[in-house]
Length: 440
Image 1 (cartoon, rainbow, N blue to C red):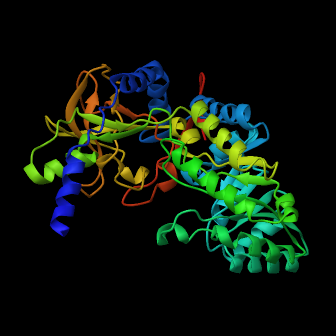
Image 2 (image 1 turned 90 degrees about the vertical axis):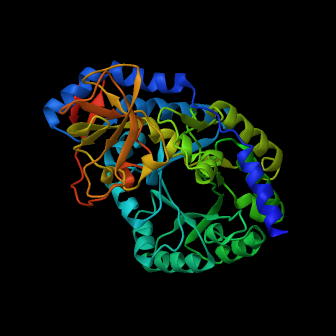
C-alpha cells in the first residue's frame, strides 16, 4: 500500500511541467542593466568592487505601485515595509519618507528603524524579550506591538506599568495547524478570551488583529485566511468588535514576474535527475507565475468586504517586503580569475547574501564590460573557500575576461539582510539615484 502511494506520488510529480521562464522577463532585466551600465561602471571606478548598489528609483516605483493598488481597493490603508526583507537604513529612511510604516521583528530591527527616522512601526514576531518590549514601550508614540501570546501580553503589561505608559497593540492570529506555524500567535477560537484578558490591562490598548502567510504567488491563500479571520471576529461580542480599529493582513506578496528558478529546482526535473542522472541545460530556466498586484489587491478587497467589513469597519494594514524591496538593489562584482574556459571566479562572494541562493534561484549574470543580450554557458563562482559559492551557470555577454564588471540585478529582497561576515568582509553600499552616485 505504501509502495503504491509512493508510486502514485512519483507519477504525479513527473507529470507536472513547471513552465519555462519567459524570455521577455530575462530580456527586460538585462536591458535595464544595459541602460544604466555607464553609471554602474562609474560606481566601480569610484567605489571599487564588490558593491551593493541601491537603486532608489526601483525601490520607490514598486513602493508606490503597491501602495496605490491597495489604497484604490481599501481606502483606509497603511503599508508597513517588512524590514526583514532588507534592513538597509537608507531603504528604511526612504520608505519612511514616502508614506510607509516599518514592520520590525526584533529589538535590533526596531532600533535600526528608529535611528533611520521611522515614526510608524508595528513590532511583530514570537517570544519578544522584556528588553525588546521595554524599547517598544519607550517609543509608544511610534510603535504598535503585535502581541504573540498570553505570556507576552503579561510581559508587555508589566513593562507598560513599569514605565507608566500606555501602548497600542494588536494580537496575531495563527491560521495554520502545524508546529512550524503554531509557534506564531493565538488560535482563532482563543480570541474572545484573549480580548477579555487584554481589557483588564489598563496600560494596553488592544485595538487590532494580525495574520500572516508567506510565499503568496496568488491571492488564494490570503483569501482563505481572511475568511478564517472573519469567522473569528464573528465570535466576538459587539463591544469587542467595536474595539477593533485595524486588521493587519501581513506580507508574503510576490513580485509580479513570478519566482525564477534553475531548471533542476523544478520538482519534476529534480526527481527525473535522481532517476536518470542526466544533466540539465544551463540555459534552461523555469518559473512559477504570480498574480499582478492590482488584481491581487482587488481579490483581497472583495474577500474583506464579504467576510470582515460587515463585522467591523476597521483600517487595513499590510506588510509587503519582497514586492517592495526586490528591485531596490543590484550586486556589482568583478572577475578576479578565469580558471578554465568554463569557470570564472569573482571578487565578490555569496557571503553578500548569506545563503546558497543561486543553487536554486535563477537571475541573469550580466557582463557590462562586454555587453550582449546573448546568454552563454559558464560557471560564475565567488571567491569563498567553499564550493557552494555560486552566482550562476551562465552569463549575458560577448565574452568573459579578468577585470570584467558583472551585475546580478534585482537582489533587494532577502540578500542584504542575510549577509554575513563569513571568510570575507561585507562590501559597502552605494546609492544610484538618477545621475547621482553616493555612499549610502
